[in-house]
Length: 340
Image (cartoon, rainbow, N blue to C red):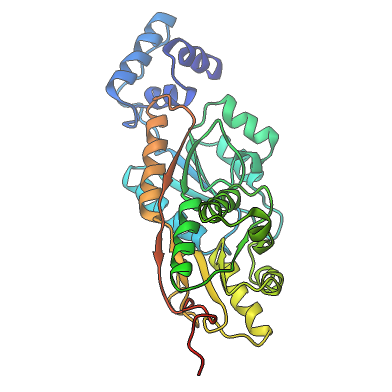
């Protein structure tokens, strides 16, 4: 049957997933696409499905690298709710300490009634070459949210990282900070690369030479301890403010500053990214760039459904602007503060 499905898909100009939707009477296919598939069945001499041949709801995998970063569960929850409302079954797929990987989940999903996959903070490349090739070969609808690596051939939804950094820099320079650090993820991490580009553009527009601001940039893993360690190097460069690539890094920067006897925000202003749960309850409450999780989840689901309905979507990236939430972790530069 799989061979016949592929033949119908090729003849109708749709994916194999769409053909299966039609064969099983799914409502996730537009009338025009359904008619195109039905005509292909007639031409190829394959029996049309009867009204009683209705399938179970399709599953959609939500693939995340881990659940330690609070923004990943936030996206998973927002996506799951929207998928449920469309009659789809969300399946959470995340790495576990006992060795279950993204590849294991992809293998299981491919053996089931898979409707599509949303990768959050990762991509099909993380699932392994074999699994990634299988997903593409079967034409499984996919959407990437804040992908960690380059995926020029995929449909993506991402936060506008460069804009977020420039918002934070404008906020800090407005309070008199002149030497501001940037603490981001490892080299090659795409969202961090976008943040660095925004950082460079900001200083270039103000006539600050690259050799001046480059020592203000630090790279680290997205953990508290890595942030605490990395901020020490930025403090040696004399920064009075630091913009971080995640809330975890920002909380680490606060910890690292305190280890040196510094006070946040009196001696160092810190800005995070994500506005994860409880960032308003930490001490000090964290100024951070809030990702529009609900809007991004809606866009990802809509893009996934369009593919599941048989629409061909070219590679595209939709960027969403963040909102800077100003709290207690930022204040006037100590160099501008009146002496007591």
